[in-house]
Length: 259
Image 1: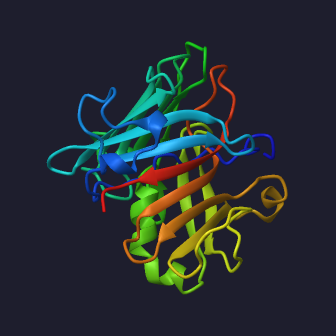
Image 2: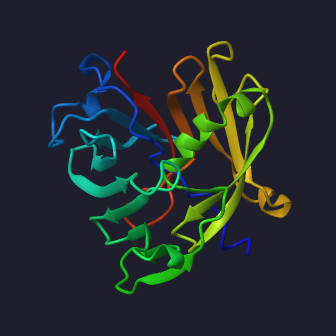
């Protein structure tokens, strides 16, 4: 079990479609708004290596006009499209349909509700540089969250989390073809997993496996939110985009919005 969950590669793009268009002046140089996305991005993520601070790639989150769907373009520093993700919130804000494809090594991560709701959720995963796809059916438990639904769940339990109480969620991980029980709790430290943040205007939430034994081997995920707007400002931990060889990457993502 420890090897199976040796990294907490579960998040990545954790947005529900309720944000404004990005202001061009706020975008870092290597993730410029105007270079490649077909449509103007509503949210842009600048992704850097957690240790070296070297730029890794850019995230462009593009919301549909009816706010029910999100397309995410992942682009390398030279703006080559390396992966895509399509999120459909029609089933639920906390349990959207998600399909993520890596264009470099054909990795696939998929979680989609079946047409027959009695069959639950179809979860599929294809490893990098492999051809076979493994799939399972998962029943949606009451506390289940999927991909970008995590962000909506944080806001739904905002006062509980900001008040210092812990929250336990079952996070669906296509990589593991299983759910991972996670504990989310506000940090009481001035450091958010070894990163400084403004404790007056911001809140840091640390996400760890609920299993005590796994906690000894897995590094936490750290999310910093703005207390007033409840926007996600930064993320630190294992990301959902692998490196060119298909290996896990640990990164810091900074998000940019208008206003």
